[in-house]
Length: 227
Image 1: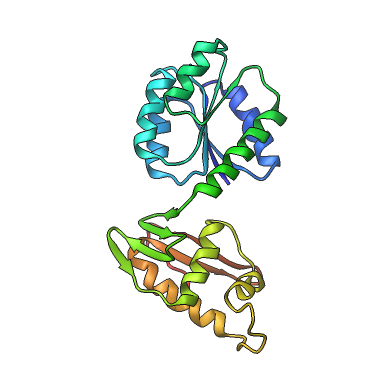
Image 2 (image 1 turned 30 degrees about the horizontal axis):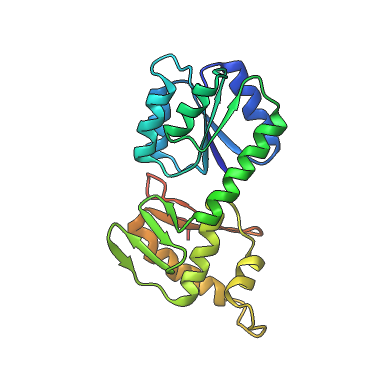
């Protein structure tokens, strides 16, 4: 899970990032609103933690701008502890509000709750220029549909559910061939290869990691698409 942490206090940011890393989160820190907005536009995050006291802009103003470009949940983490402050934060588009000082355990529990809520409501998965309709089982680049077979759709669904993470070959095989114990050993590789080729226009590739499995990620800028 990727977390965008918007916090100008470098010591606090390092502490939060280190704690979240121990729990398996990949955290990127933005020290001000300008960096946060750029990352929100260009990065792929599952959730954001937003401090309201930023050096270059009020956090509530940034929250409104982020809501225009990002779909992930946003948790406000602020020393502003008045009731009206919390109401303003939630009414401005925040999904939760936690007052400083706080316990790291509570912060992580709130993140988990927001991520569960997001998983239940999620209908689309995004990576680079690719959009995947989870319920409708269709992949789009812009408004154009990518023609995929049922098995290619199954592979894409599993890989996107763990975007940028390694999915073992066995886990992917079991998802694609759940009732076919006699499927050829190289059947999965064939489907992955065909899917990889179809995803190139979306700026997405599927990397084969020897002995580990597969990982779906954005294509490197230098065009290095590993087969």
